[in-house]
Length: 512
Image (cartoon, rainbow, N blue to C red; front, side):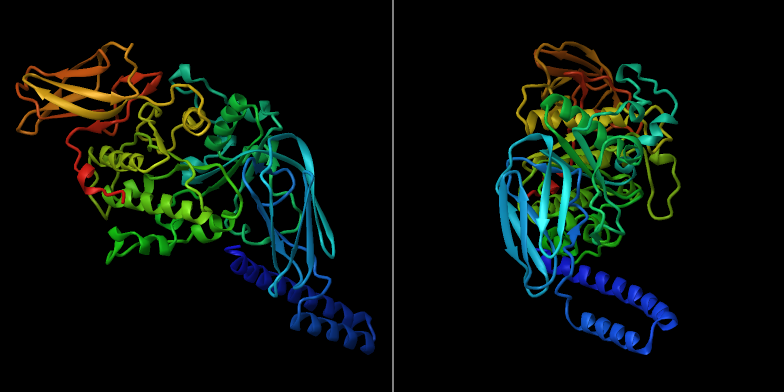
């Protein structure tokens, strides 16, 4: 299987390094207490072990395979690891028994037949020169969460934040105390240890107590909603780094494969986090990916370049897993970017809306979805707004509708097209309920002079009619085009995505 050789090479280096340290410590003790004969024998054993892998070397597993894990249902499951060269490994799980012979580098791998949902814990035995038992394993749905600080934002912070202003969205400040659902399992990626072998086999945890306090709030609330609505075990992997730009999450090869970046210099350490925090996971089967990142790149005033970076990330991750899995992501929340000082670029009131526009371009890729957070920040100066439970819920309902095919409303209005007539503009939207009607705020209108003014907008017969007495011949419409939007255009209980009809990226961004 791909990545095994690279992984095992890393394991070999780590194991040898540990062995040398332990050997040196042992020799120091031996010099003090043992005879010269014993010392000579010890040295002989050490040297022999360094020349060739010990025939009795223990089986090693990657961190992602451990007790308490959730395995993805209905897909062939990879189980892999490292042992002595030429060793026969047997994996027994859920009535299946698979065998493999390690190669000359010690790699081994088996593939289990697709598994059905299993809410009752099971054990997996992995046997060779030694036997490893992984216990409390469930079979259900597995999702990977990644991004920067708003994805990393830990559950423990909920107990310390002020009460949110929008009481309709609730406030689960005591969620960690209340969480007792053993059908939800979590795995928190440590960028320094994921590539190391697992010796305790407890990297996965039940979503409760101290493990949950340190876990992604968005990831947990997504899993909670999914588990309640599907009634199956849910596992969530969080691999996020605060302050990270998008580039470190993309391999150098992925940048090389995207024509847009030909002859362009890529900053921000391409692959820095992909190699240690994503690549080791690519043999572990998942249902899909959740992504919440962008603030760092927005500070650089990026637009189309970010869209192409997201395209490279999505396509390269799908290629690495060999699946065109669902990729659902979060529109970054409102923030006062124009009030921030930057030595690199000039930030304005248009900086964030233009970035939202770039994020929205990825909806043109298959099997993607974006949720709006334009209404989820009580303070424009807060880069980490508190409503993480609602972000997780909105991601979950998108997944429930599009991945699990439940008949539910999962999106607010998304702009499709506009028709201009004398004195008014008529807009069509996807996900606008035909039963909705009434006036809405947040729209602006401009004529040929490009000057936008506040407009009147009304929902009628599944369309939005926009006009302004100052604009006799409208040419462009915008909605919530501000870093502190105040529009109230909702449908299905969800906010509309901000947009402008004079969007330049429609023609500039190519998905093929």
